[in-house]
Length: 320
Image (tube, rainbow, N blue to C red):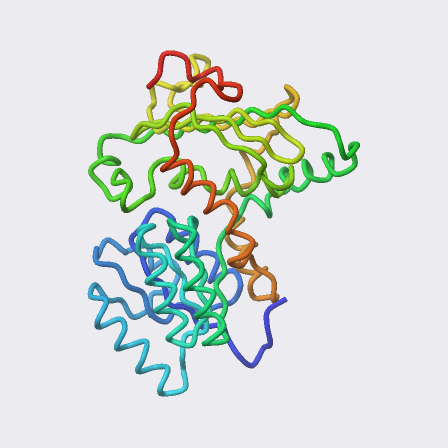
């Protein structure tokens, strides 16, 4: 299962104090890897102890950089640099990984703007190293089952899809980098990008996009893929949770296809481990795979609102 027994894969981690970092540490552990060095400007990283207590930890990038370079010159380089930093730093940290003779494994969104991808592809060619992104929905059993169901239907059949994702965030969200559009790319980029990728994975290339609503806490619009018409609504405002949401539940996630709910609320926990295993096995999702969804979220962020074009999601009424 693991790549060779003579070499334990060595990982470095950027963004070790972040929300998603524990999933990466767990994945490194479960694929038989070792975390040799981690960096985060915040030192709230005690979670490292439950996975890799011997990892070197740095709160200054320059010292982390020096250490990574030192072990590289000593013949013990990191094989992979995993990147869980704020979105706007991803492309810089990916370049750091490639210059360090490591592959990059980067959280979504890979970058904020499509033109950033061109520079990364140049660097891949120069260094011979690869950029992988985490698109865990492509590995989710429920999404794979949905794709199989769609693939056997007549090629000209159009599906009607509603995508609703509400994930409540408190006041801290807007104070943090996530609330700053120049750093996070805004809500469609920050919490939506992997859903758009999943829709093209299941329903084919994107043909049209119209944005109906765009505020710091909501976004909504209409997408047409080769085989689906999609009404979408994203929110970080708990007031958008449907009235029937169970008490204490802060997230509502729903995808319906022709009125039928796709049940995929479970099954999320081990997808990072699957993603890592896929990379180690020579798979993974590279820059070309991710480009269409990065182009789309960049467009959603900057295009004119067109509330009259395409069907509106039912949750849009009274918003904006």
